[in-house]
Amino acid sequence: MKKLVLCVVILFVTVSVFANPINLGNFPVGKWLDPNYNVIWEFSSNNIRILSTSGAVLYDFSDKSIQDFGVFMDGMQPGISFTCPEAGRSYRFIKPLANSDLIMEIDRSGLPKYTVSMKMQ
Image (cartoon, rainbow, N blue to C red; front, top):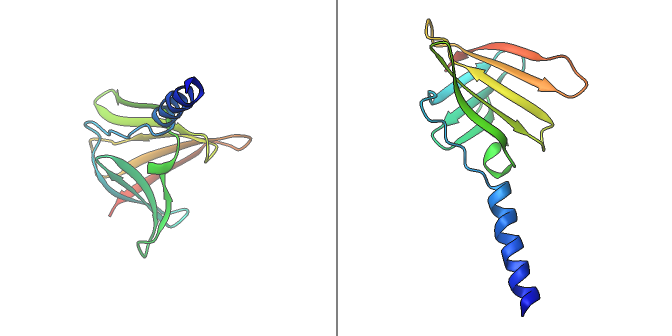
């Protein structure tokens, strides 16, 4: 009986560690096109997805383990950052106030940092 209770407690702790919800706070929701990879980054109030231009889901962060998620202000510009171990990348998004673009920076292990300005769709 003690082993069963211990297993249940470990299961709840594991689920709570890996199922971190995404809360964008004041970060704007919407869709932005990455012109280099021809994919759309979709930000909703509780999830981030990568879509093909035809709308097919290519990557969904809702079932991934998100670490170090944070909403921040870069001067007056809102931003979010997080790490996704399954993707092997750290992401940083900044929303400039001067236009509807979104700046994305990706740190990739062993590769140069990827930076792109994405246009709102």
